[in-house]
Length: 249
Length: 383
Image (cartoon, rainbow over all chains, first blue to last red; front, side):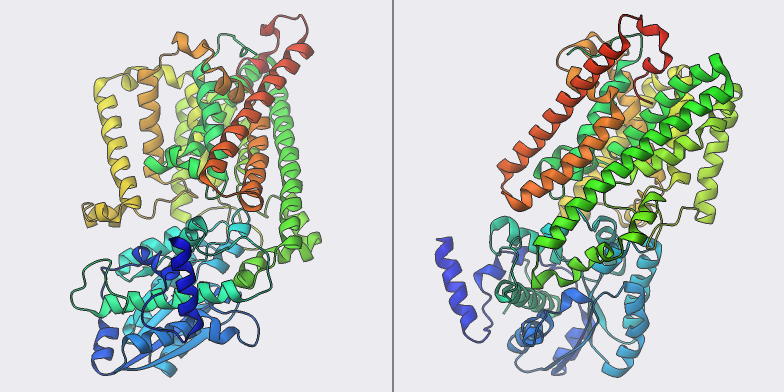
């Protein structure tokens, strides 16, 4: 039965993205935060527009000429455009590989002035863990980024590190993931738990995250699901009342 | 192979052995079996047990040496021991390098371009290896030995003071802990950041263990065995258990009053959060209350595997780090099923026990027919 759904999902992926979430993505749907509001994004959508800024490092892009179209920021834009057909959705990106949270906050102020986003999607944590960055500084950078985004009228969604089985015994994500979780709780901003979602996919065998490959097929599907799940998170968070586990259209 | 039996407190060996097993299970990333380890049910984990008991045994062994042979001889022996641990650390680093060099060589995936950047340091081994020798480069899961080395190197004057004015030594240790929090002391690491286990913080548990070994435990006995203390400890453990459950069942988090959450988080492992110390102390109170020193079961066959491991803590710790690397390798290269996790965990512990048994055999053979009391270093197992 699962094979059938997987095949069906592959079929769905072959055509241009649709609002129905493929089974592969749906598997992890319950891991997406569903009880926090995004007020700025909600009022923007009510006013028929939605400007998103994705601030991130190397795991927010895919390599190669087609990488930009396959990576989750573009997938998020497509999914949001389908979810909110009445709104003009834009997704701006400020993505530089190998950039710590402290460095991202430095460029965030300028981004906020230029892009005037309603929603900041902030992917961080991996580079800081790789460099063993100072944990207090990491914590303060997150606080500062969320605060200046709020002051500029943008909601924030945090995205934590990827689940990367091969480098798990080399990169100690633990403390940085914890800090992100508690910063999110304190500021009442949603945390998109990319680590847990990808771990679930790896455990269920939804996606093969273990094999060595140069091919972008799996990476593209993973990013597509991340984009769709992010859009589902936004959709839940801008609805006044949404029963948990529903939504995503 | 029966554990070495002298008049020592076998509870130390037992719980250090158990701590070594738990550290091994926790060190394999994403190990399903690590659900059983104590870090999931409260604030502290096996590291506290390990550091406390290491302080206890260090004071037991070198305290006797300092009384019998003086400051210089005892200090020389302490430094020799820290040198051994340093060599062990470098040995583990060599294994670590081999593992990641393999990953760098064999793995390529466009999804993980960023993460593979962590291997860039292989391009400048000149810097990395020097930094590792200086204990500033900190590979994952290899943070305990540098802490242990630093604690032992600084232990001679502490021990000297502990033997003369134990209360003063304990107060001084607490003062260093307080100053660490006030001024943010820690040791810098490479390429940036600080030590994962802050020695200025963790020394408190080590010195407290040493203090207990040198008579403090006897002084505390009336307090520890009182029903009020036991009840408080049990209540605190129950509280920590409830908080830990909110990590896994977010709906339960709503039951945790916000004011508590705001005050307890983040629970800082690097600087040995007070909540962690209290959790460890509560565990210790419960254990001391329910497991008496002369409990016959401590000498039974059932506990001897853990006791054996606890008696060779350095070797078994290093082996555990290596086995954790190897276990993770099996998960990524062979199979990632739950059954594999269980088998790898059990086989790993089995290898640790077998190695400890062989080491005990070696020790007995090398000691020859001499009576065991001649060798003071032996009475407390490895320091």
